[in-house]
Amino acid sequence: MLEACSGTLYLYEFLAEAGPDPRPAFIEHFLECTDSPGDILVYNHAFEITRLRELARDYPEYELEINSRIERIKDLMLPFCAKAYYTPGMRGSHSIKYVMPELVPELTYENLAVGDGDAAMRAFENMLSTGRGGVCM
Image 1 (cartoon, rainbow, N blue to C red):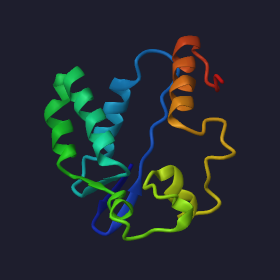
Image 2 (image 1 turned 120 degrees about the vertical axis):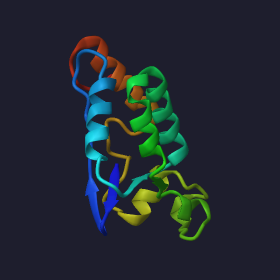
Image 3 (image 1 turned 45 degrees about the horizontal axis):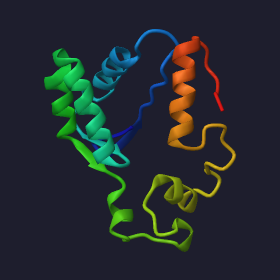
Image 4 (image 1 turned 90 degrees about the horizontal axis):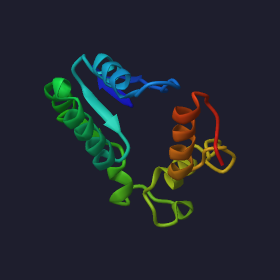
């Protein structure tokens, strides 16, 4: 997640620890990192907003704060959806999987142990069920 405030970009990330449900820790981290005014930049706002609404539903004590953050979300995917920037390597897609390597060639999903959403979900479930990190292929 990127936050734009007073012309400065701040990058925040969260990596869940193995163990109990990581959602409360994520919510606390998210709210703390986005407490200052400014836009919250995401890639694919429809996906991110849906996940935030699910968190607000499941943790109603955070609903007002989460909804106030949702109002500030801006989507970095829009220029690619509109084909305002396009290269043949994007293969007609605006998925970050195809856009990112075209913008930053050294960043690619090809050599990652977790190279797509399904593999990420399996690795995360493995971490939660075994209490260990790592990739379950």
